[in-house]
Length: 74
Image 1 (cartoon, rainbow, N blue to C red):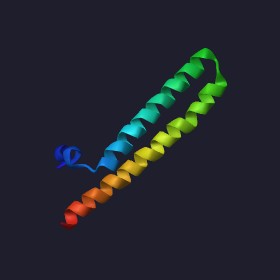
Image 2: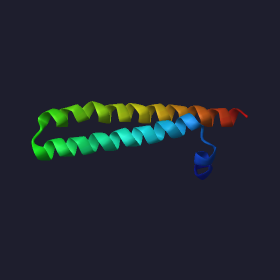
Image 3: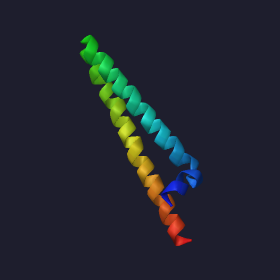
Image 4: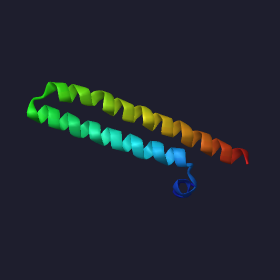
């Protein structure tokens, strides 16, 4: 079932997963650039971007759980 889920996953789940991965990646890159260049403002500003990515990740988990529960009821 786990291998087949992505093929049958709802579009909103796929959007949430890719958005979360993108935001987390951008946040990490901003954090690395800010810390290596000594720009503490940029490093601090990257934390909410990472946090938003994590929130979207949790939302994706919720959407996936709902889709799986609907599959069990059928």
